[in-house]
Image 1 (cartoon, helix red, strand yellow):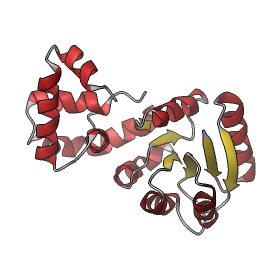
Image 2: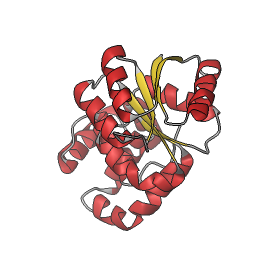
Image 3: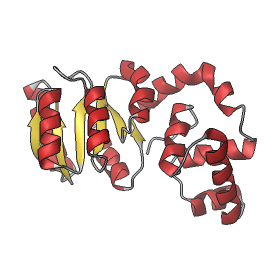
Length: 211
């Protein structure tokens, strides 16, 4: 997997690069110290994934995310954030972030996040996920009001990255029934596709698993 790494602090960037290359086998093809440089490198090198700090000079990580996803949708973007940045999760997911890794996370989470990206799933560090869920606590009832208990359960399992067959086995229902629930979820929520449902599940605080 080829990556462009964006972090304004040279020493932190060097440490991350070492962890990524030695711990996950990722090829860091370039480094950026600000958002403008990140966008230029992403456009020129077209990496598989970008890992970026939120607080970049010139152009923020969130704005860089939005532009990368708009112009180069094939590039996955993972955000590095502090647990206190949990309020950015919703807007980042809306703009197509592939995941959030907390800055105080264990190094093993880098590998978990990258494997999730390879499976086209979304990864959130537990600390980030908990903050996002806390912020959404008051809104859950509104989000869930249009869903039946079964639909809510299916949506929760989609948020955990479970396949249709896995959901059917876990719930003791047929694959066809799961597909019906999925179709009705998309219709009720005005969403299209599994990734859109997964993002909604996380935003709504329905995903309690981060791997």
